[in-house]
Length: 202
Image (cartoon, rainbow, N blue to C red; front, top):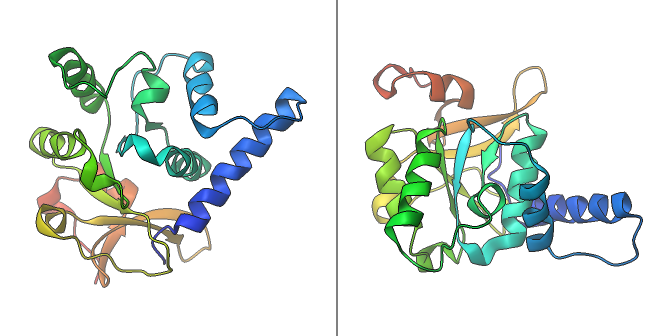
């Protein structure tokens, strides 16, 4: 079960871009940011989400791809600039923080999207810390340029399990939460179970 690769996520983003172009019957291709913003306008009001996607704004294409991958698996991820397009993350304000807190409280988990841009984010460490204190269902969602099945987080990221996509014994694609390459459980069990009772498979 490999960690999501940049090429896989970018391919899924390109699928969304192609679908958007076909729906519009247009020859022009819109940017990932435009498609995501339009999704916010067209989407009905969400009352809850499966995961709050903590990410760098510089990773628009990867975010579009990850959103598509998660939706393909039947989940509803929260992406701030899709679901709250008027939110200005470029400024750290109490109002922005209040909106993000509210959205985190209506999300069943938080996925911390690690890329080369994550270290530059003003918000990601704060979101991770807040959600960890609130619900303690934080998982790292690593995006790598190469195929691997293991993630070793540095500093505080090493405190959290990581998420990968893989098949179950029936061949169905699912999300898996790993404490290590040999200690794991499926996402649905992990998110519904208190951490001390998860019962990790070895």
